[in-house]
Length: 248
Image (cartoon, rainbow, N blue to C red; front, side, top):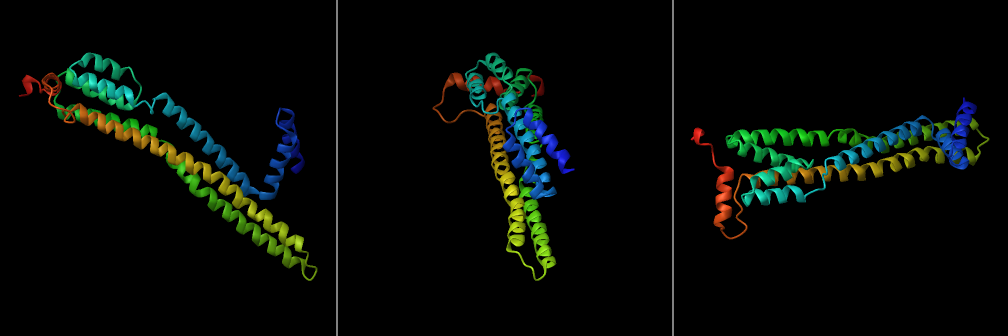
């Protein structure tokens, strides 16, 4: 079995990986046992999730905080059609939520119905962005526990070997077993730490986007009180939020 694994790793080494790296990886798997193998599988899964989420955030331009605010400024200035085109042309969820609010007002729909639709869209958009964050959190929590579990198993095996040695005690039996046991803890921590950092950053990015969406949508239905009263802006806001005549 070991010969087959070594042959496979040698084949990978011929494919371009340095032979010493392949030998070290093989030795790591052989010394750590199945726990290290499980941790390596979890690390591959975590990397896949992180790269997929980064690509998803890039696709929706989660960091684009300017487009929605520029569109909101245009809407408050009375340039509703230009604001709608700018917001609808951005894949950013905050801009898309604003576009739905502007589109609803343009069609003279009741404000509660528009708010409900915008809330529905925002909930679904954020739920899609939060997909697979929970498995990433599980991997971050499970990796050090698996490492500790492997260490306990390794220590048990080391002391069993020491017991079987009887009076012919060799310190290398215990020391060798201990470093092999501690190897699983080191691998578990090495997997968990970057996953925790990635999960925290992704979660914070999505929370920041959710706050931006809530702020933009709220401002779409409320007047701007941060500056002095501007008659033109007041009329633009009144036109933007005016209820349909048939609903009065």
